[in-house]
Image (cartoon, rainbow, N blue to C red; front, side):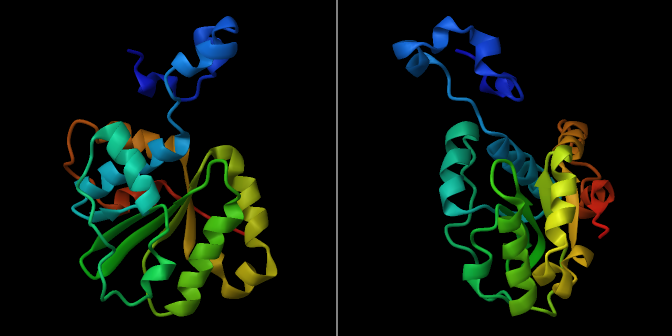
Length: 200
């Protein structure tokens, strides 16, 4: 059986050859694990190592369970937090305590960065006094696109760039690799130190 983790960042044609992609052979190839799921898994592991509870949307929980045999998700997003649940339950990853959000992450791989920023702007509007870090997690190549999106009048008026940081895939992988053997010393400040402020 092919190790799916080794497919990260590689093309199927390169790994298996042109002929194997023809006709019925394609169905026999292992499913390539998306960068989106990989980054969510890194965030889940690091969140648990930082002593947070971790939430991902229901649809993504199924993918995580299948790929990593991780089942320790809350059945429902805890009530009692200071923002309506509908504004947080579909954020890609949340580090939280029972009734408190510690950090929120939107992973932007193939989707438009605009969608993640829109979720964050909703949070800022419905709960302006809530203070926790928010991160756009994306490849380094998307940083300029993020900056351009931040210049939209809606986000600029909210000064969203002061609340949201950019965490590259590369830096997230580096942190995950460093703490792969031990959780000692892992906390939100480590992640925050590797994230970049967005200057517009």
